[in-house]
Image (tube, rainbow, N blue to C red):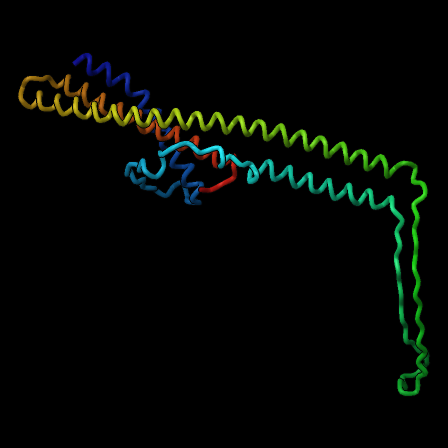
Length: 248
């Protein structure tokens, strides 16, 4: 009895922590679903199918970063700088513009439109602007834009290197989680056999209640380890999809 009470007291802190984490997780889910936190939410406890989620780690061909939000933002900034660079360069070239106008007008002090003498007039021309000297302002502006382009390119490469490293770490975590899932599933089967044996021994009077409780605790612990391993895999999978910018 003392042994059982000690085990119960040792489990209570973990149980309270899990209950609190469960409340926080449900509230976060309500926020994502745009549901009032005061509305009760019933969670389906159906186990997650292994065939759907837990099959393998992503291959290298799917590690493209083209849809990553940070990379796309840097690409847009680079595109903007390239456009500014082209505009700055174009200001150094001569500018030739053509214009033309045609007017048909008259002037009188009454509203006898039929008696007016209308006079047409027209004009055409071209205008040529040749930049001669602007105090090296345009050249400094172009050099500054080029420097900004190089800085963004280096920043983009730095971000890509960090993202690639994160992807490798995440894929390693997914592989470890898969090994844990397989190991814990085998352990669940062994724990179920041990629990059934302890239950048969207890029903036949050959085993004690403490032995049965120990076997049941071992079974619950195996299932908890399996759930934790699946959580680690799904968490890593979500992080991977967030980096590569996909919703699959």
